[in-house]
Length: 404
Image 1 (cartoon, rainbow, N blue to C red):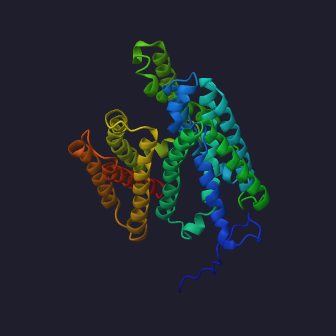
Image 2 (image 1 turned 60 degrees about the vertical axis):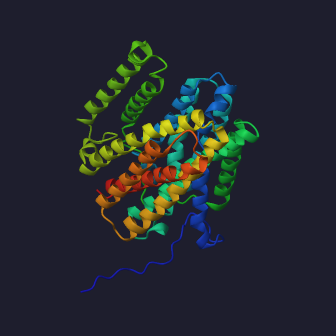
Image 3 (image 1 turned 135 degrees about the vertical axis):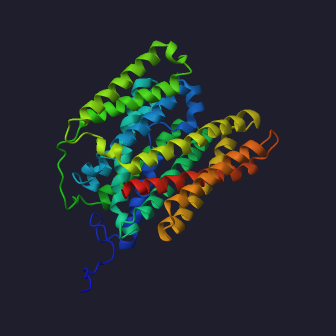
């Protein structure tokens, strides 16, 4: 007997009133995602301008920037619970308000603890708002919930926004002041909130999940461990590593947070990150590949910036123009992965090999062909390869984790 499925009508978003054309509803949420992704606590592309006009060091601003990423990562374990507890309208309005407050604080404070805490909170709420939008249009992107297709969309939006945000920040600082980027984003976030109040209704998810049983203490301890690790990496050279009491204290505190977390996970029914997730074969494999792959790129990436700034003598605008080359690679990498991995179902090994070949070409180009007289346009090829390689590896192994 043949399987029978109920006919599925055109995709619709019940949160958006019917006076908005059905075809435009998903694009409304994509517009929200772009605004959210452009916003944040500090904008690392403006680090030199911030150092010059405040009492902050470059390490302080980098610490705040990475605190935002840590806040984003900590949200992953609870974003589904919050999605099914609050409506999209509530999530977007609250997240927009928090991000507006974060932009105001970061544009006016020179206190490092305040800056770091604000960026951490901003990262948490930015991730939640992004997930609220992306999960709403997931079935529009892939009605069969094919995560390889969905992650191609995610990375083409998120990674592109990172590159374009840096370009917008530098040119805003060049033509006016770096603080103006914060005010521009405040205006865009206010526009988003106004559109949400007019165009998004408070419709809850069909399955209501209360926020009970979440290991909030575990989330704080994981955040503490990540912040201590980041502090050591950023401030280590400044403080002369473990010769300084600051690095010693951060090491002890970070290890203590990690030990307590692992100890609690051994007996809690629902720890923030369970041992089952840590021991999953695909998680271990993806983590190992990420560490090897991005370690290979990281060293050359640091050299690449120093080479362009100090040897080629590029100013900030010429440096940030290189983001366009990476942006082109990201677009090409996402399109290639969509056509091959998502549609044609190429194997994980094949896609991994392609990603590492592109990374090897990026490294080889700098090793063999770069000299002090090169033109800026000659950097297009290696940066294009870097952008394409990073998104290919990210999409492939995130899909492997999600489908495990």
